[in-house]
Image 1 (cartoon, rainbow, N blue to C red):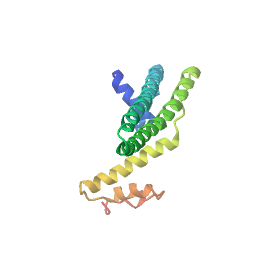
Image 2 (image 1 turned 180 degrees about the vertical axis):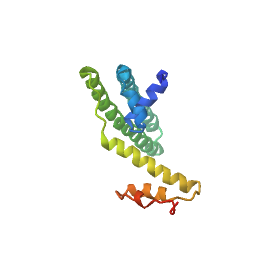
Image 3 (image 1 turned 90 degrees about the vertical axis):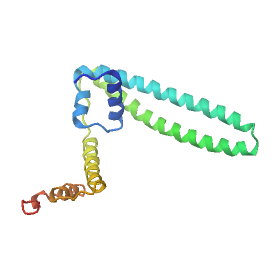
Image 4 (image 1 turned 60 degrees about the vertical axis):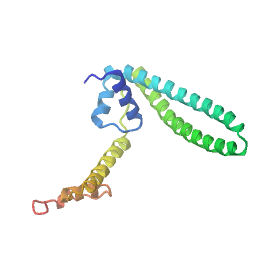
Length: 169
């Protein structure tokens, strides 16, 4: 599968968030995509760093502007500073994970060995899928089946698929 640069960059960002399917992750792990993956992560780092710089500049500009408004301005300045701080923290947290993944991908490119798939990431992906499956059944007011209930029991480390028979369907 060939993806344009924007779609590939989006996939790379989603991979850092651990929101890719195993098939999509396998696509990234194909040898011909390693350099492209590295470049996309480097571009993402630059973008996030730029966003942080812009937040800092905007926060300073707002602080100066609000300072001229007296007491009411101080209140606005505190609210704005809090909002900017929250945005900056969120972006910095994501940046941390992007840089960590970039280091792993650089090592992969340099050594010629793919990144080991983290079993916890895979398990988390399947857990989210099962939870989403359950919420969609409830959202669309669909009746669950014995198979659904067995799947949901797996979230609690219970194997109930042996209880599924043609009679329970």
